[in-house]
Figure (cartoon, rainbow, N blue to C red):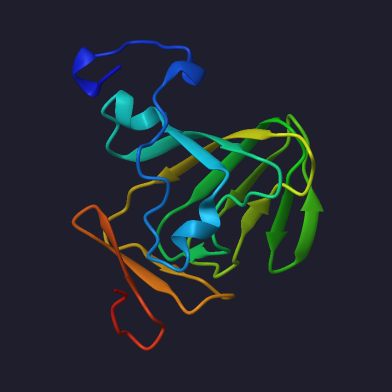
Length: 160
């Protein structure tokens, strides 16, 4: 299935898995092992916001713990029981629960699947130009330039 098919509706689990498992540079990209994203919004040519159907294998993480300056984010748990990590601590989530992350708060967040069963959830985020990402637990920062993430060390030097 390709974007050129001009889709109206699909079964979300039939959408192709994103070919590139992570935009992070190494040594961070390999930490995304066990995460599969289906970029649903891209299939419908959505430009104001993105929607991903994301599956986490046991012990997988959704992303590095991060916060955005301009992008609001929202997640909705469909299957499994991931643990949400934020600056406030840990929260066990279960199907039907949702969480939102307001841009500009600096509250670092991510999900970890600490169970033996897979987790499936929807994630929604906007695509505001000039967004920046901070990573409180890692030597990484990011800027969204021309629709692509540019990653640097916290001192501003480029990776790779």
